[in-house]
Length: 206
Image 1 (tube, rainbow, N blue to C red):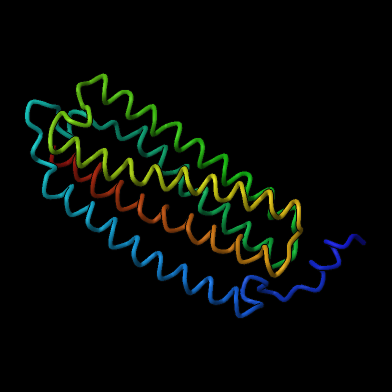
Image 2: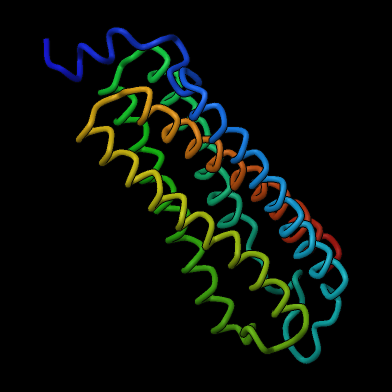
């Protein structure tokens, strides 16, 4: 039995909450998410106020292609599920399975980003640039800000994977896995609101 396996074999069921420091980090992260909610709420409010100010640019109804956006949504929601599987594997002290699920989560995240970049390029070709109208500026700010969060999440989870592979699953690395998964769930939930408010409402109203 390796040293890492020995450590993992003696972990509590929820190793991410095994120490006071870890529990404080989780509490601190909840406070951080509260600030993020306020920030995204402000961007949503700005978008809703400006979504009809299209100027000479295309409207949401003319622009949005729901099948591609729906595919991106399914990819991100599936990645949320794989991050749940990663945390479940962590609770079972199965490091190998946990790492595999985290890698799959990262790959789904990269796929989502690829679709979003393709979407933005298509919109620019159709005359929907960042400065085209108030609607386009608010759209790119909100959706792009979320995309930046996804990119950061992919980078963060990748770093966590590297730490787990190097140091094993311990009471130090487990909170990092748990908090990165929480962050990933948050950006998935935000995307559900974006899909509904920006794309579905935009297509119906447009």
